[in-house]
Length: 219
Image 1 (tube, rainbow, N blue to C red):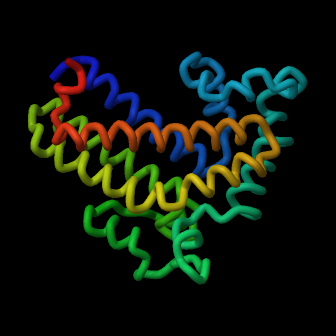
Image 2: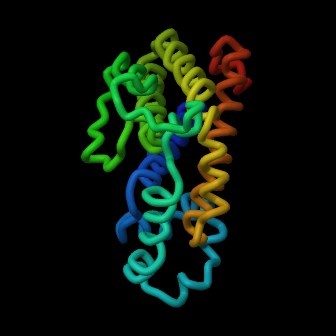
């Protein structure tokens, strides 16, 4: 397995992990410091990087006065980050066992502690991105083990979940989040998340066209 293919897969894993974490709960000082010290991660937040309030406040005050307030407004109060709200005709959230996303998670033994995650249903955007993170991790392990048939099957699941679920609603939600964001940080986060899920679907679509021949795209 060529090194660049593994490197690309690790990057996908890291980005899904980052997006899931930041859309799941408020940023803390440790996470913010990690982003600010990592040039690659900070490049995903160009507006925030030059935001004047970064110069005016400590990280602690920035989080307490602005970032946590914006997170609450966007992801807990004003917007509804759940697939069923966007895809059901009655715009009702499906919080019970009939949630189709929960059924998929059950089939793959992906367990979601809703109370710990502070979400009302399994089809929260952060949970769906975490599922993609877990799939990408499993795909990487299969690659490293030389089991390309398993890697192919996992990539097929990733493609299907993005196409049939995440892309059916998350772009609309993320555009709303971007428009409603009160801070440069969450404006950039919404923009970055939208750009990434679209580009990752493009990558998986190209992989599908090659019948999941990973090496063909690197020649």
